[in-house]
Image (cartoon, rainbow, N blue to C red; front, top):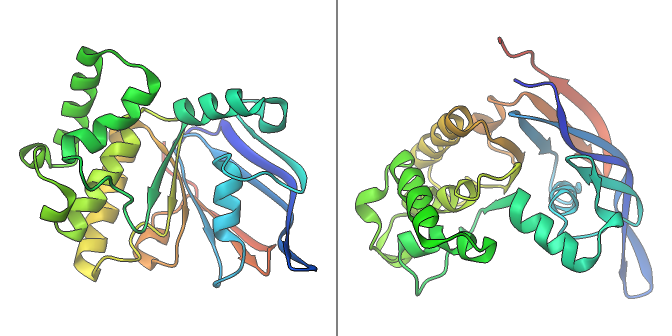
Length: 234
């Protein structure tokens, strides 16, 4: 695992207003994401896991503190610049897959490359490579509703990796899968990490996923309570 830090939260707090009541989702959180690592944010429901991922993904902004990726602070970018940065460097995998139902597998995976403005030949090469890597090339013309849950999550993984992003953010990616499919998808993400040298950040309760972690940040009520690190052989 590379020891280079590619993203970090620095003294980040996030507050929301529920009516007239201020709710603290995160409090003074410091978190570092190392290149090529599996970094996990764990904790009970409501602990702030998804909020942390949303901040790393530039979906949300902190109330205090700063977020940076590749040395670029998000608060120094305009909305347009931030959208472009997110498009090029960050990808997402959701527990509900979030595939576009009217598009087939190939088109779902290709879609982010349209947003990046890649020419057709480059899109075709990338999509073919990543669909082959996740074992779904023979399902390229199928619609999402013609696939199993595990196959849909494979499509979501392919769609995330096709951009060749700096970081993939995965919010409970095995939550809606049965145990065997969860293990299969977990093994696939580990293979993709090695093949594409991809950096993953997860929120998860899945012990099979967490067993692969390089670093685990445990949150309770928006506060960091524990960090576990595993040294990975070079």
